[in-house]
Length: 160
Image (cartoon, rainbow, N blue to C red; front, side, top):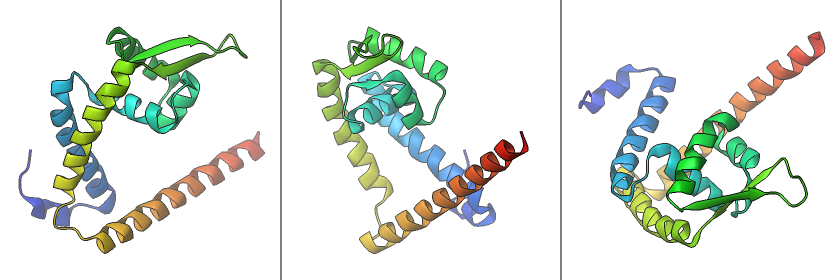
């Protein structure tokens, strides 16, 4: 891995964003590995909690922006670790509802403390105003990307 931060100046913006995201994930993964969590596992737990718990597998996959099939292995592993349970939905027997167990909630408490420490470490020397501006810029880029994808999807729909 290249240690020289100056390389970022030579990369196009999309590559910079990708590299920063990858590095952030690597630091977080390293910090959470002692808890027995891989990136897919901890992100699934984190998103499940943020969605309010007790959500369908499909909803969780959509929120994680991954295919349902990709999520299934992770959910099986989390279930084997006794961190989640899955049950049939009362109103739709085809759907499965994912819920955190007490063990999962306890682990999330430890996980959150470690993630907040990672965030603090990685965002050191960046003031609140700069972070707010960065957040707005990233939101705008995401909005523009979604608009572009939606336009392409709408054009494809009109052609068929």
